Image 1 (cartoon, helix red, strand yellow):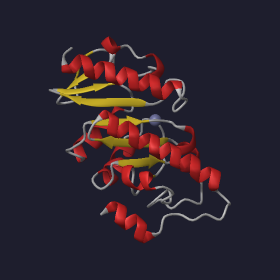
Image 2 (cartoon, rainbow, N blue to C red):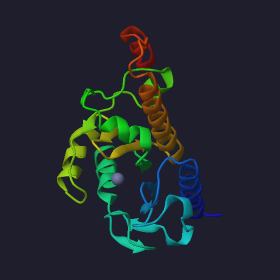
Image 3 (cartoon, rainbow, N blue to C red):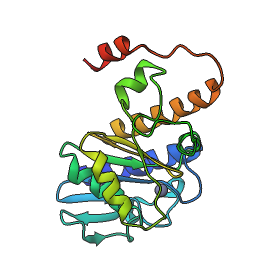
Image 4 (cartoon, rainbow, N blue to C red):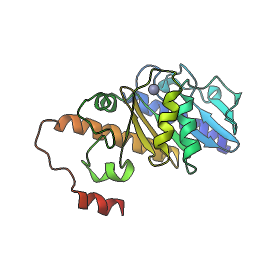
Length: 207
Ligand SMILES: [Zn+2]
């Protein structure tokens, strides 16, 4: 199997896994993966649960479509991450329920949305900024994400969902799942007196 065939299979497997566990619904959510000479990306209006390896969008180094179906309309979210973060190998964006719910709360700190509930969240996600709301298709969203992407591999779009970059597809998926689980924990713990990790404990994890 060639590296590209493996990459196509990996995207479809990850997409099905995400969809089957209810981590994104309908035709929402998109995945991209860096390959030699460009990227593979999930197509527009495609459900992550039923991706066809042969129809994935293939883009060249300039972002031009050279094979497969047209890419997701949210491809600019991916592009910005690759442009601003040189070590990015994959990007995942989901409309995962708990993360979206948290992104709508008035109480959250836009500079750092979720508290340090677990060590794994701190290690895989870290500081999570909230990107202000823009209507779908507004290219101002791309520039807003660009403003955070240099410093953060994970961002949360207000009233929309998370975008996470990783060195590999596994790294990006693990991080976005950790984010979703932490958002769920945050909602479960809301209103309860909670001991989060202390600043000293967080510092040790980051060091
Ligand atoms: Zn979206």
